[in-house]
Image 1 (tube, helix red, strand yellow):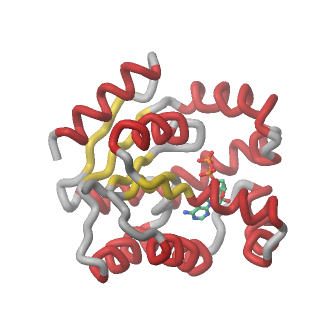
Image 2 (tube, helix red, strand yellow; image 1 turned 180 degrees about the vertical axis):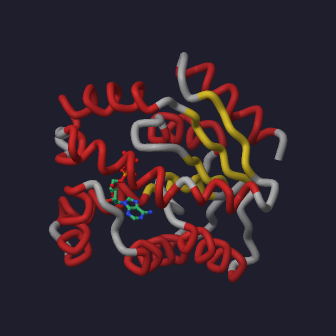
Image 3 (cartoon, helix red, strand yellow; image 1 turned 120 degrees about the vertical axis):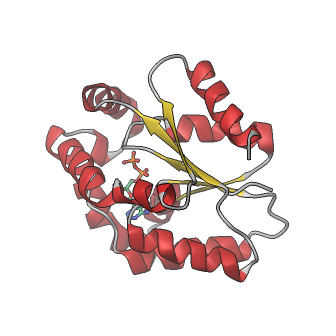
Length: 190
Ligand code: ADP
């Protein structure tokens, strides 16, 4: 049973690699971005609350995100482990995650951080914006906000896991298959 945090800036390829990891290891994918988009699409109260933050590329408040993740963990029975994608995005979220997992006698095995330079991220997000229907992918100002929020609020989460000796960095530029191979060798070393 592995619990893995897949980490990286917007456009790093977390979603792409998660799909392949789920298939190989039978893990449960917990993407907070996907969960929020589902709520948005269904027009739930949570979706309406999250909408204004998401559309501007800002973070949804911690307590909202943490509550949603807690529900998801509690309702997942017989989980073989989780891939956390897009979460934790603040140090407060990382602390809350450790707390939630310890209540189930679980822990994070490690954080795998995809390293991708900013100019490559911008090109990838703009490309995705042509087909993704995501408001936050379609405008340079919103893309810049997301990168800025990542650098200021999310990057410290890597230090949180580094302090526990749980951080592994992977080069996120190159062939998808090669990146996947590099990720699996980290996981297989847990
Ligand atoms: P990205 O492509 O930027 O990695 P995601 O799909 O992970 O995007 O998330 C989209 C948006 O959903 C974020 O910009 C943010 O508004 C909101 N969101 C997702 N996860 C979190 C989180 N853990 N904390 C706060 N907001 C979040």
